[in-house]
Image (cartoon, rainbow, N blue to C red; front, side):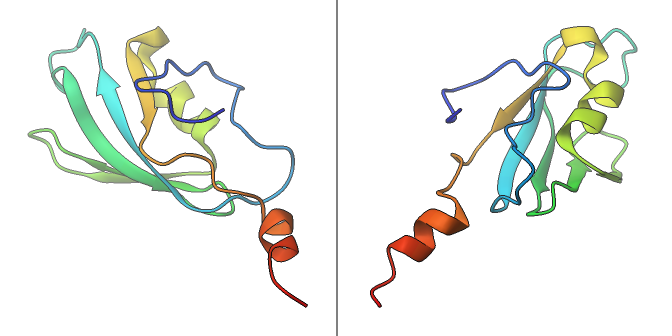
Length: 105
């Protein structure tokens, strides 16, 4: 799935089939703030590395950072039952196999 604007993410739908991916940047966008702590709008920015580990940096008043094993685990914690959107900044790049085929031999 390519980035098509703000995309609502459901837990368990990370775009992977067992292989590594290139790094992808993302934002967490909060639609509703039930706790009154994070606020709404863009609340964090982050990157998902080639092994699917995600690192987030909070942009809220209470600055902190977090590391998660994959996007699904991150959204289980910070998704707030659909009130937070994972917005991918970068499109899914071509696979390593595709890039290798493009190299002249």
